[in-house]
Each structure stands twice: as C-alpha cells, then as structure tokens.
Image (tube, rainbow, N blue to C red; front, side, top):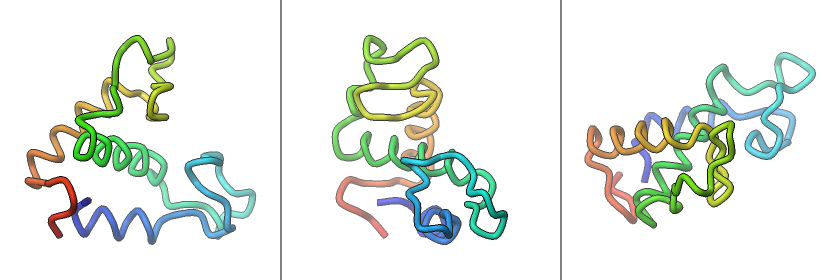
Length: 101
C-alpha cells in the first residue's frame, strides 16, 4: 500500500545483521550492518500509514499514548505527529486500502 519509492527505501535500507529494525531500533554494532539513516522513522511512519488505510488508525487514541507520545495501541512512536504525517502522505499519494501500486 506504500508508494514504490517508500517500499524500496524500507526494504533496501533495513539492518543487514538479520535483526528486526522495528524490534531492535538501536544501531547495529558494525557500521556496514546498520540500517540507513532515517530508516526507523520511515518504518514508524509506514506502520501509521498502513494502520490508517486499513483501520482508520490503530485507534491512535490519546488515552493510549504515554507521556513520550508512544501509542500502546499500535506501537507507533511520536504517535500524534506520526499519524498527521501519515494522513498527509495518504492524501499526497492518493493511497488506498488494499494497495494501489
């Protein structure tokens, strides 16, 4: 459901050490194994885009946000800002549920 460029950056830029960059957002110890700069932010925003398209957000309800902005309903960091960015991307690229690319 993501634009082709975002999909390529997401898959091509992930960690090279076999660990999930979402579950282990810290950098890999060896530089060549690290995700490209900004990968985790792209992943976080991509999750929000998919949740908005499929479920009209996770909820994204403020009562699920902790004081750092993490949403415990969907696992999105800086949820308020991230969901706003997701909505903008959906509109900009005319993204639709179920995929459009």
